[in-house]
Amino acid sequence: MKKLAVLLLIAVALVLPLTAGGSKDSSSTSAKQTVLTLSEVHAEGYPTTLADYEFARLVEERTEGRIKIDVYSGGTLYGEETGSIEALQIGDLAFARVSASPVASYVPALNVIQLPYLYRDGDHMWQVLNGPIGQQMLEEIQASGSGLVGLCYYDAGARNFYTKTPIYSVADMAGLKIRLQNNAMMVEMVQLLGGNGVTGIGPNDVYSAIQQGTIDGAENNWPTYESMGDYQVAPYFVLDGHTRVPEILLASEAVLSTLDPADVEIIKECAKETQAYEIEQWALREASSEEKVVSEGVTVTELTPEALAEFQTRMEPLYAEYGAGYEDLIAEIQNTGL
Image (cartoon, rainbow, N blue to C red; front, side, top):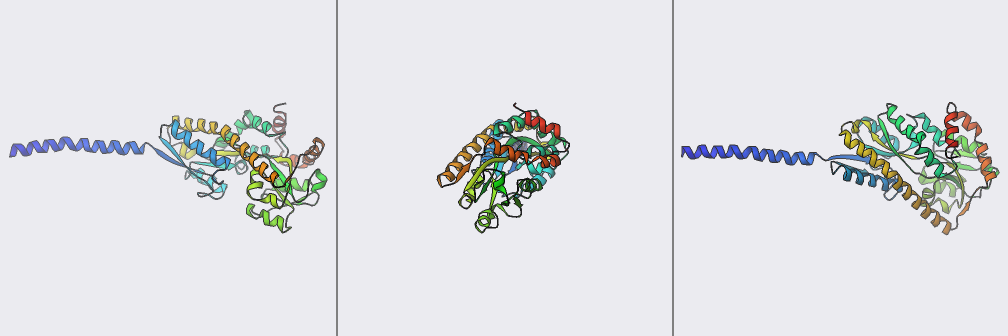
């Protein structure tokens, strides 16, 4: 019996390490997958949201499952982009898709690419953003010490005026009350065109404000104009393309520092790849939005070269104010692709 008991103790001693090791290996396998979060204020199906999911898919695939990215759309994590930026800075969030506008607080040069009538068209903008100028600005985001990392740009289209009366020239802007985002430069832009910039009206209230006569119109891109139903009360859409403000996919420097450097490089590569995908999705959405509103009676006006030149000329005081110190950069942007 004594001999049997000793043999049993030896057997147990041999089995226990194997069991513990197996359990450890199992938990180690599950721990190998790092789950990160991405905040998006736009709704499901929106071009940037589709790109977020494509980014998540590529990262999980290329890291062989080591990194999984959960996308939270519709502002479910952070309703305002400034909130997601603050979360990125302290490492509470891994990624966020935001407009370039708030990022300009850390890289002032980003204000330059938002100047009205800066680009000839969308192709011109992408030549700038994908060239040395735009890529240097992305690098400056991390170099700014903000705790943010710029991964890539996404398209947000051109912003155009839409009103209750047609606009063919600067003269037609006289006295019009135009709803704007809370942006001093945009308010000044409309004033220089002879109109009155109105802030403090949320995007969901633009329709009723136009309907009630509080404002005469607003400005935005095709998808917003269509999806918010504003075209029903402001059926004149002028293709002036006053601003083209890109979106930026940001990462948290604090979060990236916890990852394997090789995986960080994969993340950056995947982000760059999704840019072309998002641009394609944006073009499709723009086309479908335009087709819908035109079919329902919207009048689309394309400015003559002379009329557009007048809009641009009116911006000279604004360029002098907001472009001060960046004259060479502005000239370089304007000459890109010529």
